[in-house]
Image (cartoon, rainbow, N blue to C red):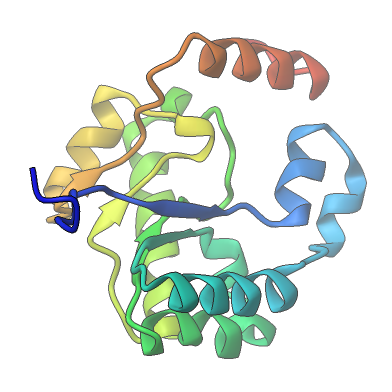
Length: 171
C-alpha cells in the first residue's frame, strides 16, 4: 500500500454541553443551561482545520434553540463540517420513550439545528448512544441517512446504569 494513501475514517464530536452532564447527574443547576460551546467550538474548528479534517458535530437541540449559540454553531457549517442531530433534551433514556415522544425529540432538535446553522441534519446519534427500534423507525420515517448510536463496548450499558441510579431513575 502507498504510504501516502489516505485511509477512510469517520470522525465525529458530540457537543454535549455542561448542562447535559449536570442534568444526567441529577443536579438542578442544569436548568441554568451553563455552556462552554463558545470556547470549545472555535478551538475544535481551528484544530481540525490545522489537521485538514472534516467531521460531524452532533448538536443537542436545546443548545441550538438558544440564540446565544447560533453564531458559534453556524461556524461549524461555514467551515465545511457536517451537523448531526443529538436529540433535543439529551436524555440517555431516549430509547425508553414512546414513539410520539421520540418523534418530537428528533423533530424539535432538527428544527433548532437547522435554524441555528442553516443546515438540516442528515445523521443522528442518540444521547448516551441510546437507540431502540422505535428511534430507528422515527429516523427512517424522517429520511435520515444514518444513525451513529452504536458504541461497541460493554461500558455503554454500565455507564447508562450508573447515570440512571445517580439521577434516581429506574432502568
